[in-house]
Length: 203
Length: 203
Image (cartoon, rainbow over all chains, first blue to last red; front, side):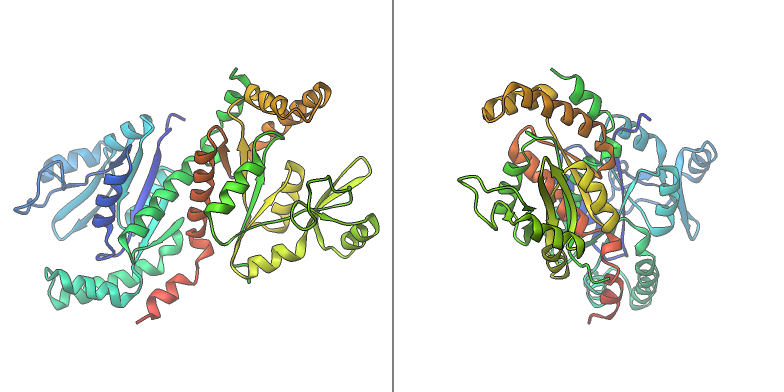
C-alpha cells in the first residue's frame, strides 16, 4: 500500500451546492486537491481548460478510456465526462487529500477501485430548497428543472450508500462538517498502522 | 433504536493525558457528558463523591453488578472500579455525546454491548515521553513507573482494535482532533437514516 493520501468522493443532486462548497473548502484547507474532469463537450465562454475541465476531443477520450486512464465516465447525449486516473494516484501517493466531485453511479465505481475512499453525500435541507435554488439560477427552463428534481429524488434515495451526510443549509457549516470529516478520517487507526512502531521506537 | 446519542470510548496508557484532554474537551464542547466511574476504594483528600468517582461500599457495588447495572468493571487488589449503566443510557436517549474513559479490556466489553460506539486510543508521541510524564508527576515510585510502562506497551500493541488514534503531543491539537471525530461521526449516514424522509417531506 502506497496510498497514503485520503480519497474523498463528494456527490449530491444538481443544485445541492457542490461547487460553492468545494471553492470554500479549498480556500480553507491546505493539501486538498480537487480532481478536474475530462470532457468532450465544447468549453463555454467563461470556462478555462485545466481549470473547469480538461477539454479534449473524442478520439483522445477514447484512447484514455481504452488504456484505463479514466476511473469512471458518463455519457450525456453525444458528450463524454470522465475522471482522469493519473492525477488522483499521484496526489494520493504524495499523501494529499483528493476530492472527486462525482455523481452516484460514478461513486459506486470509485468505491470498488479505492475501497478506502470516504464518500460524502451533500444533501439539500429539503426538496423545496433544491427546487428554489435551481429556479434562482435562471439557467434551466421548467422542463429541465423538473427533470433534475426527478434525478435528485433518485439520488437522495441512494444516499445511504455513502459514509457521511453533509446538509448544505448554511455554506460555512457544511464546509466545517467536511473539514471535520477529513480531519477525523486521517486519524483512523487502519490508515495509521505505522504509528505503533513509531511510538515504540522513537526516543 | 432509541440510541440517538453518540457513545465514545476513550482509552490510553496511564500518563497519556486522558484527564487533561477530557477537561479541555468538556470546556469546549456542549452536550458532552463524561461518565463517572463507581469504585469501592476510599476517596482521597481532594476527591469528591459524584465528581471524581461515585464512592460506594462493596455490598452496593455487588448488588449493582448482579442487577446488570454495571457495564464493565475491573478489580485492582480488593477494590472494584465499574461503569454505571443508567446515566449512559439516559444520556444517549437524550441525544447526548457520552464519553467513557476506560481501559482496553473494558473497551472490548463496551463495544460488544454498544456496537455503534466509537473508540479512540489516546497515544503518547513516544514511550520516552510517556515515561517522562509519569516521572514528572512524582506520585509513583520507580517500580510503579516501570510497571505502568509495561502495561502501556501491552495496551499500545492492542490499539488497532480502536477506530481512531489521537496523538497527545500538544493538548490543543488532541482536543481539536477529538472534536472533529465527534462532529464527523454525527454525520455518518447510518446514524441519520431519517434524513432521507425529512428532506423528501419538508416543505
